Image 1 (cartoon, rainbow, N blue to C red):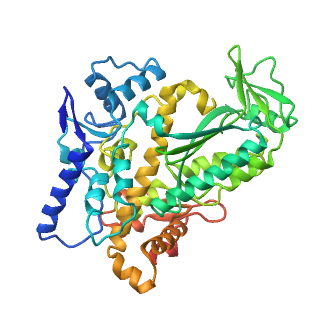
Image 2: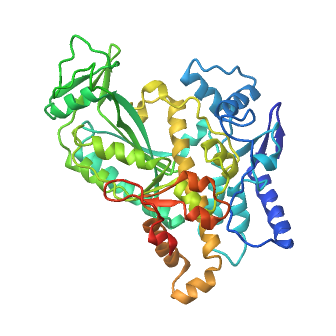
Image 3: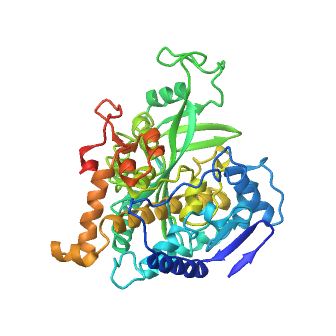
Length: 471
C-alpha cells in the first residue's frame, strides 16, 4: 500500500516486493549490455552535504515535519523521539521531492531486489524467505522493535564473573543461530565512544584497580585540583581521547549485547571507577566473533589501545571487516557512501544522523538509557547487520550465481559451501581498506577492487592491492 503524506511516500514491504519482481522480469526480458559487475551506479546531485535535496539534516527534518511536528535541534532526546515516532519499522519512506529512480538507482531498494531474486527455484536458499521477510518487516526504526529484542547488558567491573560467563555462552549461541540463517562469518558491531582528557586517561592507568575513583574533567583547561601526570600538565600536551564507552554486538533484530564502562555521575560530576581485573570479561571480549561495521577500524583501535589503561587487560580483536570494503567488493560505484544514501538505496528508509550522541551519555548501561536511545542503538546495529548481508548476497550472486554447479563440483551442500565461501571472503576482506581517491574514480567493479589496500606492519597503506584481492 502506498500511503502519501505532504512530503513523502510510505511503501509497504509487500508492495516493494511486487515492484522488485516486476523490475527483475523487465530486466531479464531486455538485451543487457556487456557486464561490468556494477551493483549501484551513481546519480549525481542527489546526496551529500552540498545537496539541498537529500542530506542528513534535510532527511530528519522532512520526516519529522511530515508527521506534523516541529523540527528543532535544541534537544537530542526530543529530535530522536520525534524521528522514531514519525518513521516506520516495516515500510519504506521515500521523499516526494526527489524522483524515485534518482534516490534509488534501481527504483526499488536492494533488500527487495534480493527478496525477489531469491524466490527463484534454482538459486541459493540462504537466507530463506522467512528470514528475508523478517528483514523486510524490520528495515526501519520504531519503538516496537525493542519488543522482540533479546538484550543482555554488562557493566565492566560490576557484572559478576558468573553473569559474564552466562552471557558469553548466550552470545556464542546467538552467533551460531545467525550463521545457520545465513553463513557470513561476521557479526555486526558498533561502538559508542566517550571523550576524556589524555591526562585523565593516564591518571586512570596509574590508579589502583578495584579501589580507585578518578574524576573525569569536562575541560582541557588547567584546574586547581588537577595535578600533573607523567610530566604532562592539563594546559600542555593534553588532548581529548576516545574511550570505548559502549560496545554493542548482535543483529539488532533478535539479539543485542551491550558492554559499558564503569562511569558514574554524581551531582553533575563524572567519575571512572577503575575495575579489578576480570578474566571472564577479558575472555568474552577476546572471544568476540569476527565483526563488521562502519569505520570499524577506528572502533577496534579505540578498544585495543585504551583497554589496558582502563583496567580491562589486553584486548585484541583480530578479525574485522569494513562495510566500505564490502561495498567495493560488491561493485558499489555510487559516489555517495554516506549512511543516508546507503540506507535509501539498500533499505528504502531514512536514518537519523543529526541527533545521535545521547546527550553524551553513551556510557550509561543499555537498560538505563532512555527508550529513544535504546531504539536508536538497536537500529544502528541492525543497519550494519542488514547492509553487510545484502552486500554479501549481491557479491555471492555476482561471482557464484549457480549453486548447483558449485555444490556439485565441490561435493558439498549449499550450507557447507557457503560456510567455506564466507570464511574465504572474511580472510580476503579482513583489515583491508579502500583508497578512496581511486575508489571514487572507479567506473567498473574491477577498478573498485583495485582500490583496496592492506596495511603494512607499521600501519602504513600498501601501494597496491593485496595479492588475495587480485586473485
